Length: 245
Image (cartoon, rainbow, N blue to C red; front, side):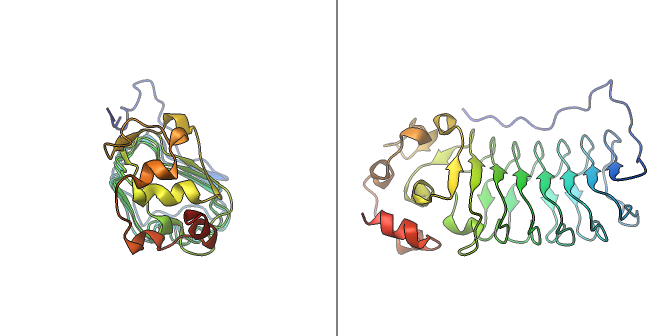
């Protein structure tokens, strides 16, 4: 059974934190429902902390003139939507935390512009689809947490066809994975490491149901299915070669 644990309630003992002068823009535990686009964040800010609020939408046009911004933490809100290009003006950011929200879909423009992003945490959302190029142009990405979502498959070009990261730790626990030919590419690529594969369980098709990722083979995933040519779209040359060995 795969359960989604929604954002927790704000602890009754939480102290309202005000914005601090200096490098940290701190608005945790303030019950904020809407972003005020007219509010100016100091240009010297390195960390934005907006956890434990009631935000439902994170708009574009809010993060501007922040050349030193390094981390954005938006976890434990009620975010169901991040506007396209919301992060496109903060290319210096290395870490974004969006866990414990209600995001359903990631598109190629959701995280556009984050060329220095190293860590992205999307754990415990309602993700059911990640589109092509959603994580493209992130050459230094090293940590991607997709635990506890509603994903059934991942497409090979979600990192883009070229210029993908060189070493990504991928966390996939607690999704209802359909471990058939659409996921075969993930077994073949060598620049990604599925972390804790013994806890990543397949729920289908029937011939691999209950199998964990660490014990899967390409033969298991082939089953009795035919392979549409689209499966090869986005494969690296190396993966394409190994597929026919």
